[in-house]
Length: 122
Image 1 (cartoon, rainbow, N blue to C red):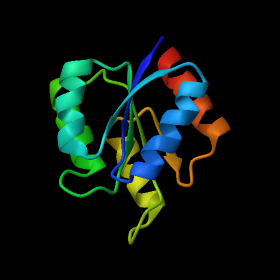
Image 2: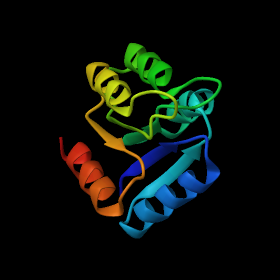
Image 3: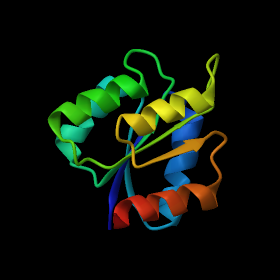
Image 4: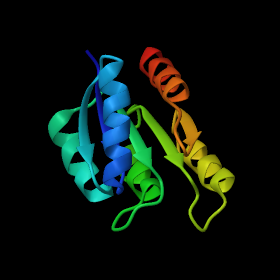
């Protein structure tokens, strides 16, 4: 069973994503920001990281950059609703930084599971 690290500053979103992935048979671990994600990534060695871009402390793009410096082959899916920024620009930047897939909020279960399956198969 694949292990997925879910990183989102919103507890309700983390719980929703965790439930969707658990129902699809995935093992999950959650982090509330980029700093906690980096720590858990080193401890848990997940198969995939599912990462919100807009977060306090260390945002998703900073987290991707830090992980890429340490392990360029880590599979990451980034997502955002954009907040005060253009979601398209943020998602394009995430793709340029090496995310294997990008999604827009609100996350749809079928879209999320499909992106996760595709990322894990690549």
